[in-house]
Amino acid sequence: MSVFGFWSLLTALLILLCCLGSGGQAFEVYIWPEKLAVEIKGSTEVNCSTSCPQPDKGGLETFLKKRAIEDHHPQWQRFLISDVSQDTVLYCHFTCAGKQKFRNLSVSVYQRPTQVMLKLKPSRVGVGKNFTIECTVPEVKPLQSLTLTLFHGKNILQNQTFSGAVPASQEATTTFKSTAQREYGLLNFSCQAELDLRSLGGSLFQSISEPQTLEVYGPVQDNQMVIIITVVSVLLFLFVTSVLLCFVLGQHLHQQRTGTYGVLAAWRRLPRAFRAHPV
Image (cartoon, rainbow, N blue to C red):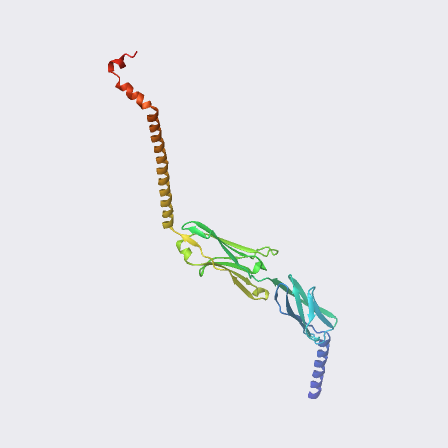
């Protein structure tokens, strides 16, 4: 066989293989983004595509509101998904040479922690006494992605995550109990809510509460209170004593006016002999 004949045969084989491959080639379906987090009642774009050069058909399956936002293209399609109110799954599908493939996308709905409330119970406490810090976020979702951090100044007092929270719940609360120190009144307390959606294809959202100050009073004020109580007790004792003395003196004067003591004095002035033999 000549060299020209050899190359002709090789070219024919390659063309045949290519033709056979194009008729039964494998293809893939893609969806973008691969992870998606959407704010509640919000909207987003989804792109469905395929490696099949001439797909028979394709589209996006979902119960949500959808709208194609560009002209139809054989290998890719873009959709606007709107009014997302709960977690769901989207399905991109294409059919190529009679074979259908699909790829799914999980959509997570979130609600930012826009309101963070901090309370000190009580707000005024003595040194060495117990108090409680309570931080509440009334509306946030998903709780599994939430972390609440309590601060005293820049120092972290406590971190709490809600990975085991009930999915239906939308309120998060964390508490911290401590004993008041004198320096606790020098810095503010605050609470930071952090919703980390990066593992779900979203962003990191943070919100912080209004700072609260704990009023801490020391032993000096306690001593003053003791002194006040002691003085009041002494004055009360003196008042009661004076009332009793007035009562006793009043009774004494009353007895003198009625003659009780006069009779006794007259009896003493009688002659001794007469008192010895009374008639």
